Length: 468
Image (cartoon, rainbow, N blue to C red; front, side):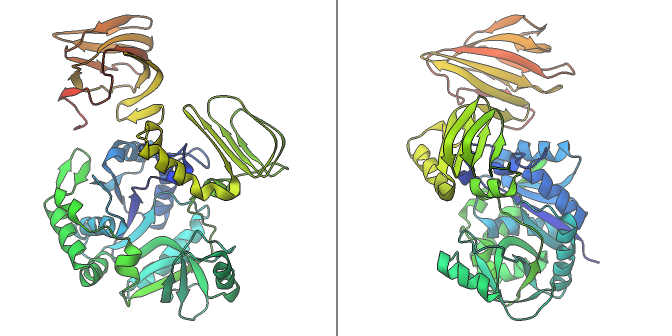
């Protein structure tokens, strides 16, 4: 029996969930529903439907986040494939397909975005089983969600007749419709939402990709064959960046004559906007979802999320209010699909709020900007037990370190020494240094940087266990 391997596509940016979701910490890594992230939920759901370790394709910047979140729930991976730059889903799936063929030439792929919400894992697993049965016959299968509303934010699939839950041929893939067309689709009963989830043989997918997009097929195969393993990760050759950028729908599913769809009756959301978060979250008697330190008076049908301070609302309806340490979003709940326009303006202005939070995660822990002024910057640094930063120096700044909690092992020039709570040291400009946590508790310290330039690119690394 062919091995079914989950393929998790974890490269999205989730810009419509700004300011919570940002380029360096997008929505799939956030715990939006419960204690675990959307990625972790997806990994568990995939494991229940297909027990083989997953192949995960992600952005190079997110590699340690992916590995850490897998380890946190005790789920090993078969391979984590890194894209230095995303080329859309068709090339990404092709990379995973080659990795799967190396493991089992007859492998079947269960391709899942990392940021969808599906609560009924049993119904999902049953739909996967039906899809695998069709894939065994050479079909490229997608999952069509039975519509519950006339949504204009989803593409639709029209199938060729048939009834019941089994796979049936696809008649057409349809772009996101306007409101009137969506109403007609739902009323007809002939259309399903396009979920962006797939099951097919890895070899069949590669053959169909070569048939319909030969340039992508050739480039991706070469990039995979010339790739290399780096720590826990696989890096395709730089030739990957020359691949055309195509979605799997455009590249393969629409032109192929092998497309089939399994109607999926389980509840599903792509969690694509704040209104979707509101719809999928518990609400009070006034229709509000409130999280954090919130006082809502005469407020209805709103989502209010407060991360770091008190947020009060008075006499408002249908709002989304999201407060983070460095940004606040206030939006009409009916306009949240346009939040990405704010992100576009932030990027055009060169502002960091489009890509980073005040707390920035690294493989060794995290740092958070507390205060910045002319020629100085203050950060809170957290180092996980047993971890250490790179051996490095700075050409433009000196640093003063104060231990707040835990024990620090400091390398400064030719000397190595430890600091306990409420002890400090000074790192002169141009001196090699390293910070490590030899203890069993998280090391927390305050760093004061002083100098004419304080950018993160003022780092010269000599040794780094994370391969940066």
